[in-house]
Length: 231
Image 1 (cartoon, rainbow, N blue to C red):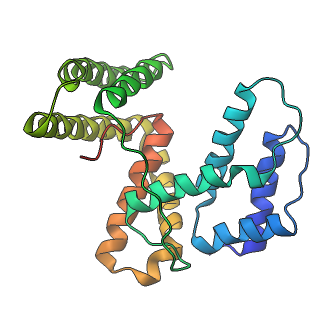
Image 2: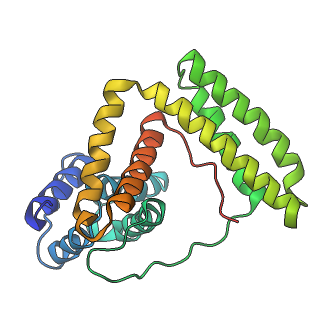
Image 3: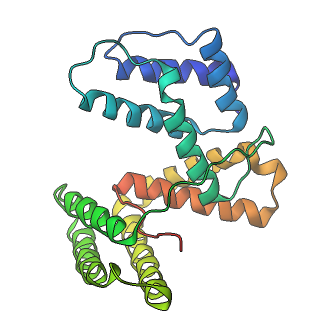
């Protein structure tokens, strides 16, 4: 497991790049804050993505007036970590569980966002096989979108089940898209993400967690969103 000082150095270096070389030192209360992320087991990749998310919103507001400080990124980072823990099935290393349930998304809005993201993904010119899989998924999502507005009970459950099936098919296509060498590297990264939690997990639970982490990393590498929606 990476020690807190090294974790903070890497976060500081990444934040410096996001600030166009402007160095904001992670010291004092900020060091304690970031060290806390390390103690909870927040993977560095998630910390970097949380910084990205905050910066994207910040830049969208217009010209920057001041460099981004790490303190401003914490909500994004911990939200991503909460989602990651639920996905891979691990608990925080510090023993606390302060996860806050996200607002329930509406099914039509979820489908609209998926169609938009998958359409944008096709513009990145993926391989012919992956493009065909994405196109097929978009066609199916269009059909599901037409029935989603008034779907209740069994009808909604059927849409969610179909959405999960489409998600699984796209994930398999994404694994083929990234290729074997990158898949091996992603599997190693998934192992590293889960390693800090491994001592408190059974072999079966660790295997499931690594598989889930690998799936998330594969999605990220292929630019694929999560299609599933919790009931």
